[in-house]
Image (cartoon, rainbow, N blue to C red; front, top):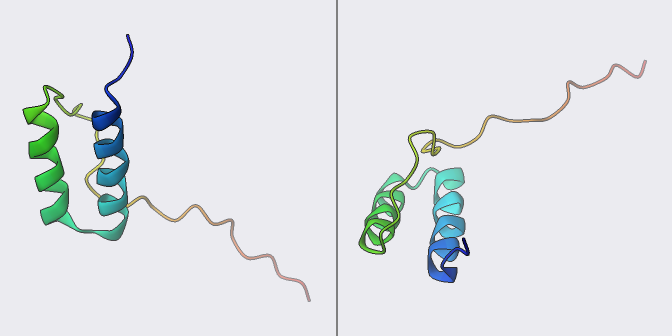
Length: 60
């Protein structure tokens, strides 16, 4: 099954808004996705991801 390029673009756009904490824009993109027949999965992230930095090493 090939994915619609518009849906793929909206999902990338949505992820950017999630990372920046722009909940109102996430909701607007979700509406556009629904209009195109894409239902977001329950596990779709709506919060910014946690930091993935490694702990700082002591170099003394």
